[in-house]
Image (cartoon, rainbow, N blue to C red):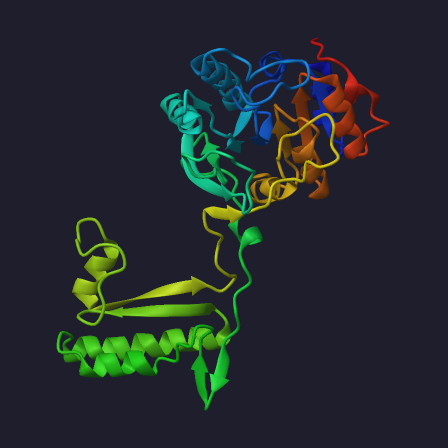
Length: 357
C-alpha cells in the first residue's frame, strides 16, 4: 500500500493529497474499497501535448481507449461498493471521421462490470472557435455517471434539488405553484362518461386529500390523470406501466411533485473554464462541472479521487465542500500548481513521487 495514502486516510485533514506518477501504477498501490467518489477528465486523444507526455499521445485511438479502460478498472477495484465514478471525456476526429471515443469507452466499461446510471450532456454554451465550413461547431461533451452496484450507492438527491415554488390562496382556494386549484379536475370528474359513480366519488375524495397536502406543504404540486380525459403518462400498456393499470382499475391517478423541489435534468449549461492567462495547462475543466457530482455522490466523510488531476480543479472543489481528496498526475509542474491552488504548501508529502511499503 502507498504509505502516503495510508497516512492520508488515517488523518483528519481536508487538504488534498497529490501524488506524482503514472495513474495506472499509482492506483495499483491503493487498496480495494478505499475511495468514495472518482471524478476525472483524462487528456483527450490526439488533441494537445501535455507536460511529461502520458496518455492521449497514442498513434492509434484504440490503444488510447485500452489504456483508459485499464486505469478505470483499477478505479473500479479501489472504489467502495457505495461509490460513484464520473467521467468527462471529449471526442476526436481522424480523417474527418468523428470517432465516438466517449461512447466507445462507456460501452466497454459497462461490458466490464460498470453500471451506467446517467449520461449528462455538458452544454458549454459558447463553445470554441471553429473555422470548418463542412460541419457544425462542437459545443457539448458527455459526463458519464457509473456505479458498481445497481442499488445502495451513496446518492444525496435532496442536496441538489431546485427550490420549489410556493402555493398560494386565491379567493379562498388553494392554488399550486403552477396554478392548479382542483376546479378543472373536479369539472372533468363530473363530466366523465368513463368513470362509474363509485370511481367518481373516490376521485373527488382523493382530490380533496391531495389539495390539503398542497396546502400543508407536504406536496408542492401535482397533476391528476383521469381515464378518458388524458392519456397515461408513459404507456397505455398495463404490462409495462403501473400507471396504465391504476388508470384501468381506479379510473385516475396522481403525479405528485416533491415538496423539497425538483431534481435537475441531464443537460447542464456550464461555461468552460477561462483559459486566458494560463501558460501551462489548457483543459477547460470547470469547477461547476465537479460540484454537483461531489456533493451528490460523496458523503461528507468520504474521499474524492481524480487520477488525471491536472491543476487540481476536482480537489479544489472537494476541499470547498469539506471532502478529502487524492489527485494524481504525471506532471510535477501541474501538481505544484494544484498544491498552491488548494493551499497545500505546508503538506510536503503531497509533492512526493509514489512509494510503496
